[in-house]
Image (cartoon, rainbow, N blue to C red):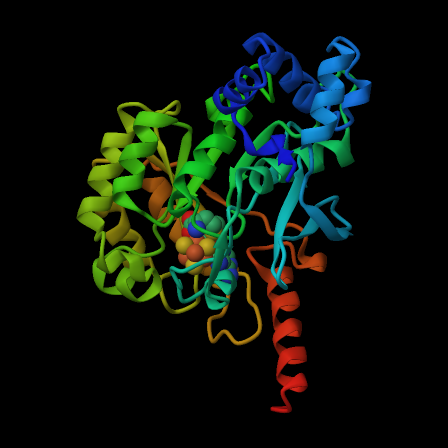
Length: 360
Ligand code: SAH
Ligand code: SF4
C-alpha cells in the first residue's frame, strides 16, 4: 500500500527518508513543496533528483481528504464537507475577516463527550481522524483559496473548533499542530493556532509540555452542578481541577491568557447572577471570554439567549475587567456552525438505513 505523506510530521518524514536511504534534508525539501507550494505531484518537484521522485511516485502519495461538497455563504464563509469513509463526514470552515483568514478544523468524526447542546455530541463517536485527515483540511483549504498579493496563504489562523475533542485524539492532533508551526511547512506562530478543549485535564498538561499553542477552554457554566449537566466530562474533571490546569498551562502558553468559550443558552446559563458567579470562579486565571450565541439544530430543546441578555452578561464580565467578545454568527445560511451540516448528512444516512431495513 502507498504511504500518504500528509500522515507524517517533520520527524516522521525524516525517518521515512532515512529508511529509503535518502538524506534527511531531502525530507525538508519535500515538505516545502508539499506545504509551502501546495504541490501534490512529485514530478513537479524539480529540485529533487528524478530517481527519488520516481521512487516516491511508486510508494507514496500526497492525498487530502475527499471533498463531498463545498458551500459558500453570502458573508464569504466557506464550508467543505469531507468524506472520511463509511458514511462519515466531517467539516472544515473558512471564515474570512478583514485582518485574517481563519480555518476551523475537525479532529474526530463525531465526539464521545455528548455535551447536551452540541450536535456533534449527539451523533456519538465514530473515529479519530488521521494526521493526514487533520492537516489535509488545511492543505485542501489552502489549495482552494490560494495566496494573497504578498504570496502568503490566505489562511493565517487555525482553530481546532470543528467536530470532535482534539485532546482525545492527542497524538494525531499534536503531529498536525507541529506541521502547522513548522517553518518548512506552514510556519504559523503559536499564537495563531488554537486548540479548543472541553477540559481533558491530563491532556492539557501534556499539550503544555509537547506543543503549547493558544488554548481555548469550553466553560459554559459557572458551577459544577450546571456544568455536570451541560458538559458531562466535568464529572470526571471538575472545575477546580480544570482551572488549576489552566493556570499550569499559562506557565508555558504563547498567550498569557486562556480563552474561555461560553455558549449562551436562554434561561439556562445566561443570567446576570450566573455572570457574577463566573467572575468569582475565574478570579485567579488570566483570561478572556468568548460568548457564543447558541446555534440551534433539529432535536434540541435549547434556545439561543436573547441579545439583551447576552449584552447584560457581557457587561458584568467587562466590569470585572475581563475582555469579552460575542462571537458573530457567520455562515448562517450554509449552517456553518458547530456540526450542523455533517449532522444532516449523518441523519440522511441513518434514514436510508432505516428505510432499507423497513423500519420507516
Ligand atoms: N470539543 C472541543 C472543540 C470543538 S467544539 C470543545 O468542546 O471545546 C467548539 C466550540 O463550539 C466549543 O466551545 C463548543 O462548546 C461549542 N459548541 C458546540 N455546540 C454548539 C452549538 N450548538 N452552538 C454554539 N456553540 C456550540
Ligand atoms: Fe464534543 Fe466539543 Fe461537542 Fe462537547 S462541545 S460534544 S466536547 S465536540
